[in-house]
Structure formats: structure tokens, C-alpha cells
Image (cartoon, rainbow, N blue to C red):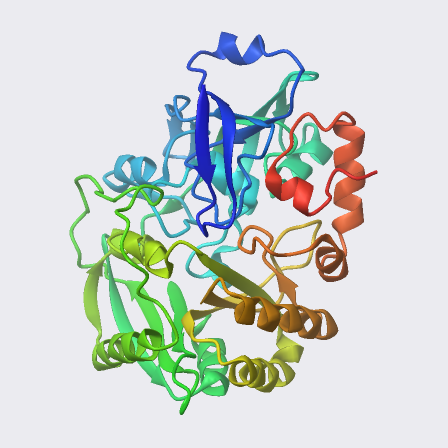
Length: 438
């Protein structure tokens, strides 16, 4: 069948062939032909699960829980199962996934392919660090079992491999004890970017979840905002019931609300509300894990042109140089930034994984010529400072910039070429970044 797919940032739209198998024999009977790519919930900011002339293979029917070992703390699931369903299953059993991105409709396969992070990467690491094993299907190689002990190189390439090694069918994932059914949340006001970076560094190791919401649309005091600091509330009762969330891709269309005139006002209201809630106050765990629930229309508020999310991993030793340069760019181009967040990170660069020791600095900005000029200049600053742009977030990232920012760019391409020389698995993302070029 034909389906029209769009990236969450609205940059890329294609009518594609779509197939949604619901039996293992349908997977195993696939024959090499036109390019393929796996698709979970399809809520990636970039076009990672579709492309022009590519058949998207929907994995939504492969959504079962296959096994649970509560004593050893692992769960085995099919790749099409969602975070929300796993949360509902595990919560009453006192367990949880250690890393969860911000919406319950995201699938396990998507978490593995993007090697995503959660609310406190400094403590939790990346999703792939908790994957014990997985099953991968490639029409030329068959069904493969991958783990740190078996097919190690391919296991490493598949985690954070954007679905380009084949269809992730199932995975065994390590679990953590459920911290509580609710969190005690405090909002710590900060006056500017320098204070935000410093306060986040101070709080990152002592809280279960910590991140900053900042206001760069405020031209008189850019960077004001607050740190969200959350710790487990052991007195809370076990959370039960289901999570209700609107589909990110079919939220009701609304007129464009975010522009240079409205954003300073909207952000000022949001910042004022946030800084008044100093806390601590009790918040249900699912509301902390999935902050996008109830805010799905945010993505539509940028209107038809969509938006650009630029997520930048700034090394610790580059923060002092980064802050004045990014503020100067915002002033120079006059772009109103809708959202700015900050998280603490740890890790070592590897292949195309978004990881390292430093801070993840994220901005959302409307897609227009001024924004594109500003971000192109920011690309150069990032390259100079050793910062890296998240590949799974930015639809305008070029292969030249990706190669300069990721030391593992060429190694990733070579390993992928060795495993899949015919480039059977392809997407708009892989073509844009020239990940298939020999």
C-alpha cells in the first residue's frame, strides 16, 4: 500500500510503499529488491523510517512481551512494543526501563536504532547500554542473534545504527527497580545560561532526574529559566492504570502560533509559572518520564513550515566559550527560540552515537531563512569547539558537518558497507548524510 509519511519536524514528506507484516514467516519470506527500512511509531524528528522509493516495513504488529525475569531484572520484548505499554506492565511489578525518552508511543526498536537518552543521561547512560541482546533480520543474512558475546561487531553497529543494518525484531533489556510511583520535583530558578550550566553540574549526581528549561526568546535577559530536579518519593503508592496520549503525528492542526512576536510572551508566561513552582511537589512518575504527553500540539504550533531542533553536545571544557557565542548569534539573527533545554551528559564518543562528557544543549526554532543562516553559523562554532549535533534531531545537518563532528563517521560507513554492500536498508536520513557512499 501507499502511505504519506512526514518527519516530526515537518521538513520531509514522501509518499512511500508501506508493508506491515504480522507473522514471522512474512519477515522470513522477504526477498531482496527495492530499498527497505524499518518503522516503529514513526515519530522521529528526522526521516529515519522512510524515504523516496523506499518501502517502510511497519513493525507495530510485533508488539508482544516474550519473557520477564524479575529476579535477574530483564525483559524480552518484540521491537514494535511501546514504552507506554512496557511501563504499564512493569510498574505494578516494581520494575522499569532505566532509560526512557519523552513520549509513551515510542517503540523499543526506535529506542535501539536511535540509542536514545532519557531525563538524566549522566546517571542512566544511553538506551543501548542496557540492551543485553537482540534479534535482527536481514533478507540476505537471515535472522541473526546479536549480543556483546555473539556477532559483537554487528550488535555494536545496530545500536545507534538508525535501522540501517536490518529489521530489529526483538530485544532483551536490563531493568531497574522502580524508584517510586511519583517523584518529588523542585524548580530551581536560574538567571542566565552561565548559572544554568553551573547549577546543573552541581545537581546532576544527586537527583534521579535533572534538566533545565531556559528562555532564549527573552531578549533582555536571555537564558533565564529553571532547573527541574526530581528525586524518588518512596511514600507514593504503586502506579497503576493506563497512559493516555495523543498520537504525535495526527495531532489536530492549528494555526501557526509560534513567531517572533508571540514567543517572547508565551515563554515569559511559561517561565513565570515554572519559577513559581519551587516545590518540592509530588508528580506522578509517568508525567516526569513522558513530558510530551498533553503537549502534542506544540509541534503543530510552528505551522506548515515546521521547525528545526538542534541538539548540541557541548564538551565540558568548551562551555565558557560556547555561551557568549550562541547568545551573540541569537541577537545577530533576531530569531525567537521556542524551547531551550539543558541536560548533563557522560560517556565517550563512539561511531555516530550522541554521547560524551559535557552538556546537551537543545533549541527549537521555526524553520525560516533567518533560522537556517543562524544554525549554519552555529555549525561552524560547534565544529571549532568540538561539539556534536544530534543526528536524530536535526533534518538540515549536512554530511560534511557530520564528518567533522563525529570521529566515527567513516568507521560507521565502512562497517555498514561491509555488512550490507548493496545498501538494502536505506532512508532519507542515510541518503542525506551520505552514509552509503563508498
